[in-house]
Image 1: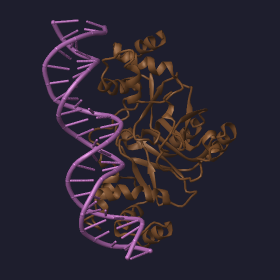
Image 2 (image 1 turned 60 degrees about the vertical axis):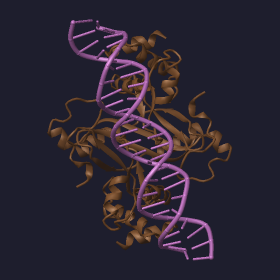
Image 3 (image 1 turned 120 degrees about the horizontal axis):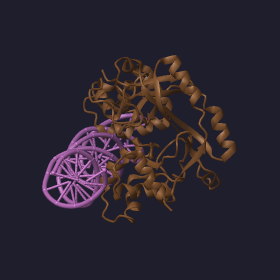
Image 4 (image 1 turned 60 degrees about the horizontal axis):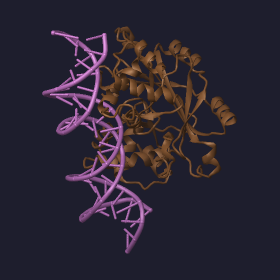
Length: 162
Length: 162
DNA sequence: TTGGTTGCAAATCTTTTGCAGCTTT
DNA sequence: AAAGCTGCAAAAGATTTGCAACCAA
């Protein structure tokens, strides 16, 4: 998609085929949440000699440019999603049964942020919110027997990766 | 404090001096947020031959028992705080200037959780919310010049420790 | 007793960095 | 041409695991 290139150019960072390949993967799946490794594997299809280190060096740039969002969902590795334009906020629902990440559109934290600023003097720049629990499928499969957080299930269905 | 021992016993996990040492550190500073390493270093004062691996093996137990809360505040390592009784929720404010973590008492996420359950069928077990920004001190020191997330300041004042 | 625990060292895993050569502007 | 990028391999940092000895219930 040209959208990816335009987005990159608009962000001001230097456009290279490697960066473009990464952004194209993100842009092609705006609903998915990739680990750096997954991004590397997918981008490699368009640019076979891409290096993993380059992906790691690219991600903070994309993040700062608002082209990608970094998610800290409690797993060991960070995940990344395509950064939609400001205002299209959503929260993440992380399934403890299958590891998949779902989205819930809505952002009602603005009022809370303002209260925090007023009451504490802390200037809020950003926030991170996610919910853990069990998705409908895992509930149906009875995978929500034992509660409390813990390691994700063994045979989890690929975690997003199709 | 005997409180730590009672708390451990009540949780059902086997009580060992190592675990007790860790819980005592947590209980002695309910307002602090320790990394596993900091916990290890502090607990070592009461139990000098404690091993770091033991701390890492103990933390998930305490977490499951509700004796400790694991925090994922965007840093590379997880942090832990003493787990107060249910209902005493608070959110975390992470300063991008000095790395310190502040708390903000309040939990108005219950209604949102219920809405999510009703609208998506996802069963919410827990949530994680934190805000990033600049604390009053860092604002006063002009450390909130450049925005956007990025690595924490070089000479950050010890991050809680001290 | 006896299964759960522990310390140590080695192993994993994710992310970062040094460096020499290559590319975008 | 100059500054910024890239790939590779090595390094780093956090967390986990194998194992034989040890200890709480």
